[in-house]
Amino acid sequence: MFKMLQKIGKAFMLPIAILPAAGLLLGIGGA
Image (cartoon, rainbow, N blue to C red; front, side, top):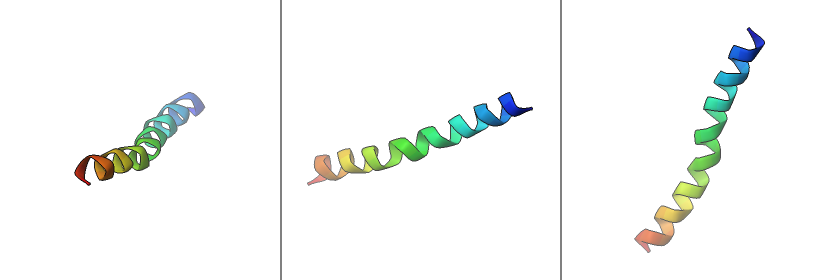
């Protein structure tokens, strides 16, 4: 059960960690 929650947590943390970096790249690319 805990391993499953860890997997789900990692799956959620990845996009949240990538979003600001992707936004930054898009902002620089669009500027």
